[in-house]
Length: 227
Image 1 (tube, helix red, strand yellow):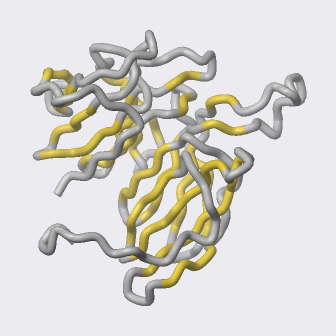
Image 2: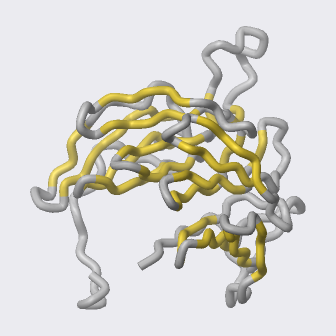
Image 3: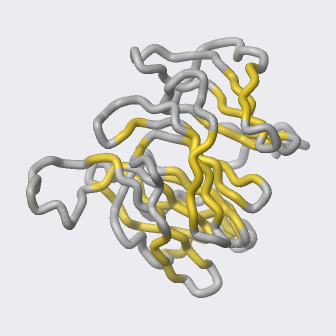
């Protein structure tokens, strides 16, 4: 509680997991996918209601995945990319989890999922944020296990993707947030595996990046929320 500057324990999730995604819509918080304690990929989706203080299982992800991103646009949750075990890849049945370009959208009113147009770049450990009715996806690790600088934007109304100006440096395990109509990309890991304190700000109007003040310390695997 920011006003009281205090924390309060709440009921635990029914499914213990890590490397999952979370999104808030229609007054509930959704925990989506991830990996279980035995590192098995998970497709469980559970909704937390702050009013009742209860968790409820809802429709599962169509495919289990972890290290994905999720954001809300138009009252629906979009789940983008991540690590998955491709059920259609008969050539490499023992390859294990790889980055995917898959995009699925969840409709809380219908409690159902729908597959949407795939991202141009398959990736995991990336970031996604909604801005002016579109979804901006940055960085991550590609299907060839290479850190990427790609910025791509998704238009839910048209179900189409557009490639935009790249980050100044490839990075993964970063976070992003929208502030005053611009996209802030914060921290992460660079190609050489080192953490960074770099903060970049993207302007949709000019399709350009500007460097903001560096973080006080280099960080990765963090989270950011704009208030």
